[in-house]
Amino acid sequence: MSIVLHESASSKMKEILIKELIQGEDGSLVAASCNDDVKSEDSSESKKRLLPTTKDRRGSYKRRKTDETRTIVSKTIGDNHSWRKYGQKEILNSQFPRSYFRCTRKHEQGCKATKQVQLIEENPEMYQITYIGYHTCKASLQTPQMVAFSAGTNWDSFTVNPHSKEVLVNYDQQVPPISSSERPIVKQEYLNNDDNTTPQRSDLTDNLLDEHNLWSDFKDLELPKPSTLSFNNVAPSDNNADNVYSCTESQNLEIDFGSFSDFSNDLVYFDESQLL
DNA sequence: TGTATTTGACCGAA
DNA sequence: TTCGGTCAAATACA
Image (tube, rainbow, N blue to C red; front, side, top):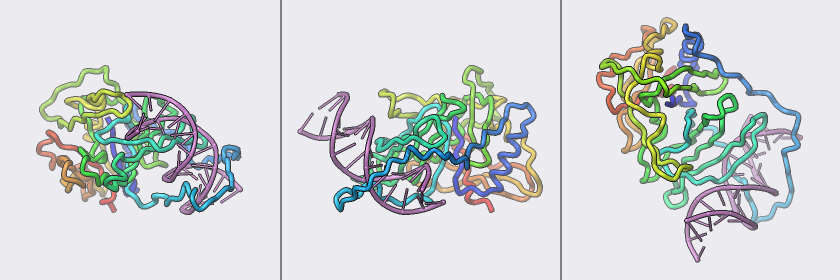
C-alpha cells in the first residue's frame, strides 16, 4: 500500500492530511521522527580528489529541483518499469545507503525517469522510494505516480512526516479484509520486481480496503473549515494510465467522495499541486 | 561477449 | 565547505 503525494503539494493539503492523520483517535497514527536539518560535523565521508581531466567529467549534473518527485513507501521496490542501478551512496545520518536507479531506456529513448530507494530506519522492512521525473519511454506500462490506494491491505498506522513531503503507510496484511459494497475497490498493482526475478503481484495490493484502512480514515476526517477536499478526474500523464483522480480543495471542509461513483480500477491520486 | 552492478570520484547546489 | 546526485571504470554475471 502506498500513498503518493506530489512534492509540489500545497502545504494546505499536507497540513490537512498530517493534522488529521496524526490526531487519529485510535492512536494508531503517529508522527514520524523529524530527522531533517540535523547536520553532522563528521565530514570524513567526503573523499575529494582533484584530478579533473577533460575526459573524466563525472558527476556533472543539475539537481532536479523542479522536477516532479513523488515519494512512496512500500515493502517492495519493484514496479512496472525497468530500472538500472547507477549509484549508491551513504547518506548522512542515515543508517541505510540510498540507491539510485534510472530507466533502462534512458539512452535509447531518452527517458528521464529516475528513482531513489532507501530503507526506512524506523521500519527497515519498508522502502522509501522517490520517483523523479516521469517516464517518457514507450515501454512504460504504468506511471508510478499513479500508485495510490492499493486495496486489501490493512493499515495499522500512518506515519506522517510534516517536514518531508510524504505520508508513510504501514499496514498489516494479517487481518482479512472486510468486504463492503460501499468501499472503493482500488487498482491492483502488478509488479515486475527488479530484485526478485519472477514477476509477482505486489504485496501492496489486494481487493478491498478494510475498516482500518486509509479510506476509512479519510471518511472520518474532520477537516478544518473552510476548506474541503474533493477528488476530480484528471488526465493521466501518459496513455497507459488508468483513471486518475486529483485531490482538490473545495469550500466545505469535507472530503467530497461523492465524485467517486465507481472506484473499480481507479486510482486515487493526490495531486496537491492543484491546491492553493 | 554483452549486460548489469559496484564503487570511487567528481560536480555543483545549498 | 558540505554532501547529495551522477558518472564511468572496474567487476560480476549470464
